[in-house]
Image 1 (cartoon, rainbow, N blue to C red):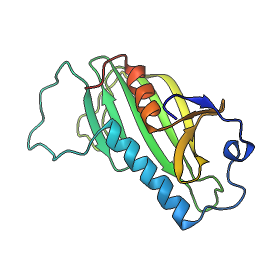
Image 2: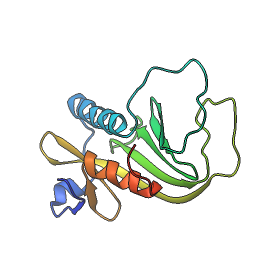
Image 3: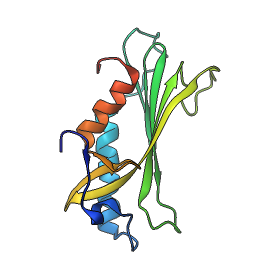
Length: 158
């Protein structure tokens, strides 16, 4: 599943009819972790703020990541299931024009505007393999979703 594809399997297209098992929830969380690691690998925090470079900056938090270029950004956020949801959570991909403030940052920047938003849900099109389904039925594996996110910025992967 290197390229996004239409899902024709009605089971893979449907939300869970029953709550997921602990094993399935763990597998989804592992898929989220792999996605975040591919987009913004965890790094040791620097002691001081680095100067802004012309390249792609990758910022990571426990629930998401931000890919920041000089004039645009993409944020990817995971919202796990709540106790009353049957679905297993959702992944929100937002493209921004401008510089996005990071959560917890002492410096709040003004001026970033949303240019597009995509909400994806985890699906298991093949047993043991988790992917992300868009509302239009397109399914992205991790590599295809990373490519999609970087493409929203218009910069090559750094």
